[in-house]
Length: 399
Ligand SMILES: Cc1cc2nc3c(=O)[nH]c(=O)nc-3n(C[C@H](O)[C@H](O)[C@H](O)COP(=O)(O)OP(=O)(O)OC[C@H]3O[C@@H](n4cnc5c(N)ncnc54)[C@H](O)[C@@H]3O)c2cc1C
Image (cartoon, rainbow, N blue to C red; front, top):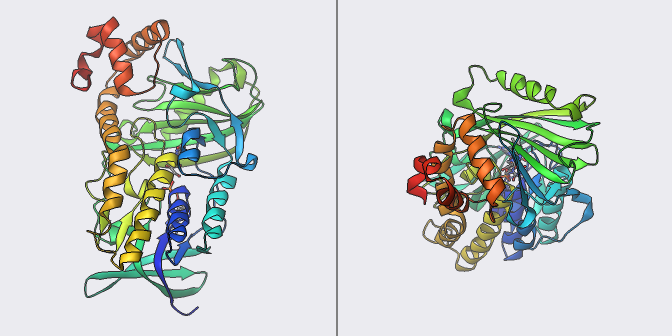
């Protein structure tokens, strides 16, 4: 293949990359979206939970094809089994729809294509191209072929394991305490209990050190059953399987369950990056560390930031200027929308990981008795402070 030329090359066709490509193309950029896998969205490495408002915020047309289940809200379980139910509207960024992520990711990419973005599969970025120090595109490998995609701006949307940002000089390396290792089974033949399949479930405590276990229903007998544990709590990464298997054995409703697939992966739980733009480059989604440090959810933030970035790229194209200064509207807009929350949740996560099972029991008991109107750190702490100030001493700075 001869070298290609475009205004914007987006590396990675996950929700963040495809949404960026969609809005960049819609706003006049000649856009190429590259994806290293042979099929967009597959294999799925995700719990697939997403709050409905992200679909509306990014003006993504609804399609039943990518909705596996719609839930009423979230149930949170403390170590002694105390249950807190939160209705959907207040249940946070991962609760509302349980996706068919393979279909969903393809759907977002289709919307990008509709706007004119060109999609290249099995096309892996292998280096960032530079001329006299300035970024000029990416080198790619497509099957056995290698060529350059020259672009006025490169978008790193290459996910949690992102390399493009690092090649361009961004410091995106993570500390072990800011990485959660995950393992998830897609299980079927799940029986009755805990109002399954009407709620997304979150199980807290030492069953998942510095993390949690989730059960996100896909249909009346099938769910994504996964666990996240902070890497600094694991002696060996393989130990994570034992934690999840032991918990499943405690669940009578899962005694006859069978596993349809199994995935592992990592999620970042770090503070927001200081900078995600540079001259002729921007980072977005997991590549820009936009995952919520408490929940590990990143689909919605990635899509939203992708929309903001695509709009800014359109403005840059009109001005003929993709410098760091010209990309600032994106930097400012995503920070205004989510930085404070990401930072607060990162600080709170660092305290949450120190809680004992007894403390989780006490907290969930109070919240279950009193009720909580919003699943945010601030709202929860306010309720707890009113009812048991001692419990929230560790979190005093957040209130
Ligand atoms: C087990 C697990 C469960 C999760 N559950 C949830 C959940 O329930 N809800 C939620 O909101 N989030 C969840 N997450 C996080 C969520 O999956 C991510 O936040 C989301 O996928 C981020 O989207 P993205 O577009 O930034 O990156 P990705 O979806 O990772 O997309 C990046 C794309 O870039 C491609 N790519 C990488 N390198 C290159 C390259 N060099 N060249 C070309 N292409 C490249 C990859 O193949 C990939 O398709 C979960 C994560 C894990 C691991």
